[in-house]
Amino acid sequence: MGKSTRVNTKTPKKRAEVTGELVGVRLQPDMAQRLDDWRRMQDDLPGRPESIRRLLEIALKATPKARPIERALARAAEFAAKAKA
Image (cartoon, rainbow, N blue to C red; front, side, top):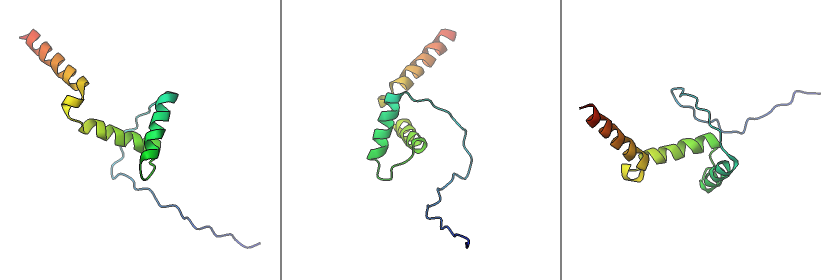
């Protein structure tokens, strides 16, 4: 029997130039379902890790007005600064 040859037809994934920090996340089934639903709406069907990265980028690019937690943190810092003075 001769050697079988296999051709790798998968496109290699692009790797980041710098290795990032590993962050482990557990998702409850309902959130995982919502993530998968979002993934399926994307043209290239990213994997879960890439989907989480994209959604995080979207959230971080949002204006501060759209991010109430940051306003609350800023007010808390302002309040703490006034209390020290």
